[in-house]
Image (cartoon, rainbow, N blue to C red; front, side, top):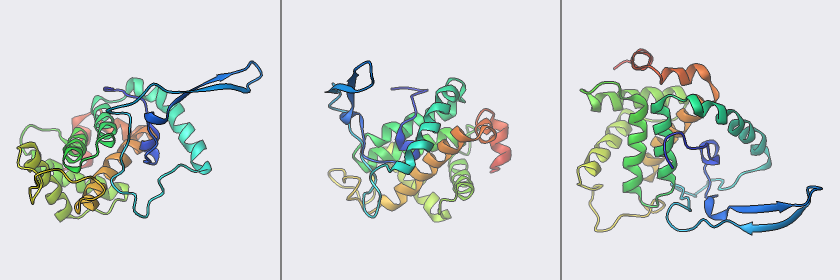
Length: 219
């Protein structure tokens, strides 16, 4: 896995469908299925975890198929010329989904967001907080100033080895941690930004130029 990875269904609608359930279908010339062979994918990276499954549709429906197919088909062309910062954001989002623990996922999602919004060496904190809120508003994700402050404070504590407050001896599972709601908001902003960038060329183009980001979301 790396920059320019293929689009997964998790960008459209996250579920616990993962590579663990992959299979190879052998067809007859008339299109009938002759044999289905389970995929040889297992171990680390083969499973996917959701931030929470409470009151959440953890499956794809028939109505999801056409828009998801369209997204995958158009993405195969877009990914070849995607702005590097968007490719990085996609990679961090995808990798985070394969991690069970909230502290590890938090740093990955925040790094993915920074891939999108950071343009200057100095003032990293202000860039993250200000642009995260502006991006959330534009994408229709409810995120407050306090949310942005807390998210970045948690991120800073984690990357400097302090853990999430209160510091636990072991990490909490993503579905058990009381801070999951805030984490989910941040992950949703990242995913929604990537999805819009894949669907809208004008939005995607913003991430090709630092000045365009500064103009769109001034600090």
